[in-house]
Amino acid sequence: MLNSEGLSRPVVRSAAITRRFQKFLLVGAIGLAVNQGVLFALVARAGATIAVASPIAILLSMIVTFALNERWTWHDRGRGRILHRALLYGSINSGGLLINWVTLLSLDRIGVNYLIANLVGAGIAAVWNFSLNHALTWRR
Image 1 (cartoon, rainbow, N blue to C red):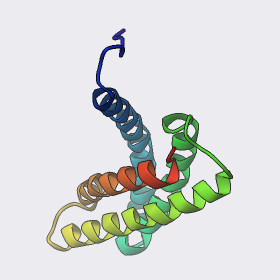
Image 2 (image 1 turned 30 degrees about the vertical axis):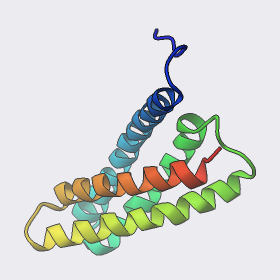
Image 3 (image 1 turned 60 degrees about the vertical axis):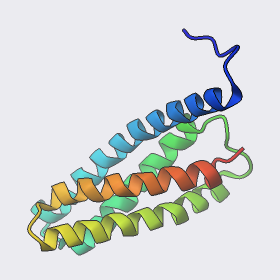
Image 4 (image 1 turned 180 degrees about the vertical axis):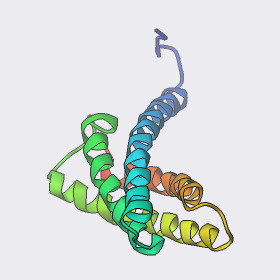
């Protein structure tokens, strides 16, 4: 185990943000599995259109990821009412939903498989979601 004594404050802060981002990515992988599974079930099994299925899949994954991020990724930073954080998270991730949805539909339109296109969209949205949730939802 490394000791942070003697390291500069920016180095310690950078390491802490890196660890938090790694947790966020693991939670995101779980959310992505939910997203992909629901998207596949709605499109391939239920016959829904991608344009309708994607927001539903993303919304369900947002619920899962909020709960996991609240309990693990930012467990030490949640202040105030959980409902306030949930609403802020939902608002921020709605921007991510839009990013993911537009990317998915755009790539699908040019022939990229919808599940692959969804992965690309989710990856782009993850940067948006982490940055804003770190700064706003679970700020110190």
